[in-house]
Length: 490
Image (cartoon, rainbow, N blue to C red; front, side, top):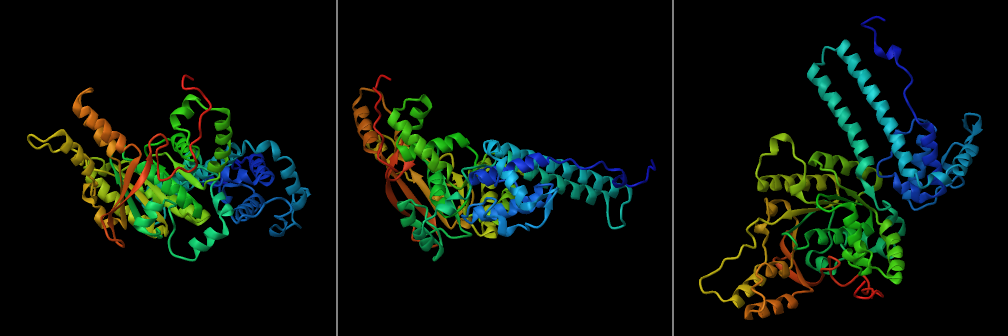
């Protein structure tokens, strides 16, 4: 072999997995719900066969538009006079659908097989290009440019695979098809979307595209719970992407199930559930599965979040992104030694630019400064006064990490007095203990949502809301609490 010959002259055929492509297409045509198991990562260009590319694109457009996609309904959008091997296009579609039933459960795995084979082809192409450019480098090219271009290619391939590996959908965008005419009128004929939480909507008004809503809070104050309830409300208008740095996917799902059923997460985990509750759980699981929410657990940089947002916006009409929280982002090496407050300020500034560029609602969670609830104790201060001051020690926007006044359109802070009162627990049996116990009971089901800063509304304002600690949720119960048929000694 000539050492200077282009490797393209000697390439082996690129790998493919046509059977996996057929399986995932057949599964989707049999059950359109299977589409949402792969829609978060699988794109038309990932298919090897050009007919499969066009078919997947047409199927996705129909399902995203709320229409059924099957061999009959897809017929007007495919050239039926073309031949697929020795079969007509219509016969081929019928064959895919007929063989797709066993593939429905495995649709995700088949989609993974398709995209992994695509990645192998891309790596081979990138390697061939690297060798060819290195052997015959143009005059306007340098080794540094070659390496930079190759790095970008590898990052792009990795991002595609990362979406498939960890972005988990609750039946992405099915909410659009189920959205009522009333919702369409209210939200599409006016600027902004509702969170579905009355207290929040009263404080801020509708949230608009390009806005950054910062939710701040300390430990056990409920900022993640408030953010997820807002995400659920926003999802009535279309897909919502959630970066969950703290809670696992299972925790998020169990919390939402608890909110809708009134069955605490603790009892769900213990299996302390009656037959009636189990029936309710099954029905609610179907509801939650249909929420168009993508949950991301990987540590991501701001650039990766921007790239994912652009991709989702283009393909599915992204409505909102929720970042929980900015302190858990992945940072480049040069930033990792910086103070937390400086990183928080950089994060909220760049996230604001990302949300504006994408034209979506953005929700960023920010931690309170560590000394926010540190008690100042004056000499001879009575315990009753200490309790009262603890309850009145509501945080302000200046207590948040970073420079939120520069980057936020609204700043919301959930405030729950009980965790602060709990830190003041006196000796049991004392007079102070009785007073403390009474205050704890008084605030058991009470919380506040504070509008600490706003570009549009007067601030500070606050609304009292119900707080349900056992289901970690704000506001009135989603449904009446289910009465367990199990005995207390179960």
